[in-house]
Length: 387
Image (cartoon, rainbow, N blue to C red; front, side, top):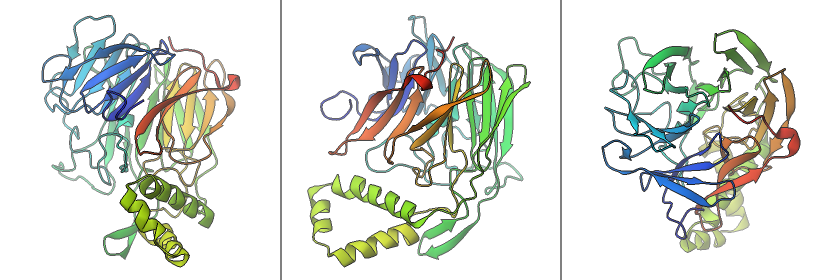
């Protein structure tokens, strides 16, 4: 769904609820569309405005059991809790100091999923919820108005936990990032010593546990609600050089997405090039223009659902914001167990959320329209439903 044949305008975020429904946050119409497991529409929530249950420019969505939490661009009241039982919306008060609107963490900002250009950071991963009503948000210092002693190249991020009324109940973690090193390779072009998304903290709220990771590390730490260590998961470290065929695979996918699915004028210009010109262009993209890092990341994205933790970041040609084509499922409880691997086999499929038996992703069709797809998971990758 999405595009001209749908009333969805810009899909900002997608959540699989604890009941197995799919909630789609449409930034263009400032509302949420809730679908059942078969894809039939159940309801619409929200509208444009500045009152309770209204939004100006929503960024992200989090499922918290019987409610949804929306992160909006209103600086004074950025969070709204929408009760699916139709009780009155709960709106947060003034936020704690931090980066709520500037969101320029080491790269271009990206507020939403858009058809042609994806930013370095997926903002939807800055907020997460759990079936027991917890909601957490990642806050970093405001880079547009930095506090004294702020290090732009190695900012410290704080993961804050709220209750259902948006009172701060805990600081889950404070995580600092390693410095990014780069070399200039041309006018306005840089090559980085690591993926731009790698230093960002990662977290996911599970059913009675919380997972923390860091993009420059191969470790994921899982803590209970009492802060006891439940598990430490280690994957092979990411110090592997990106290979030539991986660079070209990513380049070819980008050409397909931006040119072959682009306008007729773009396709005509591409078809008019000689084979030599095309090969020269591919090489320039692979080695001079795309901001490839020197090495692959270890872990670039994590999701939690029920008793399962999903990890990604092992594919060297992952999208620049860390969205992976390959995902590994680990069962956390009752005992730690490697469940299996889900591989979409090519870039371009952006996972938005996992349910107990399915995964929801966005993908651009041949006309460049962003569609929301739901894929069933094989039985070995089924998780215990949340709650």
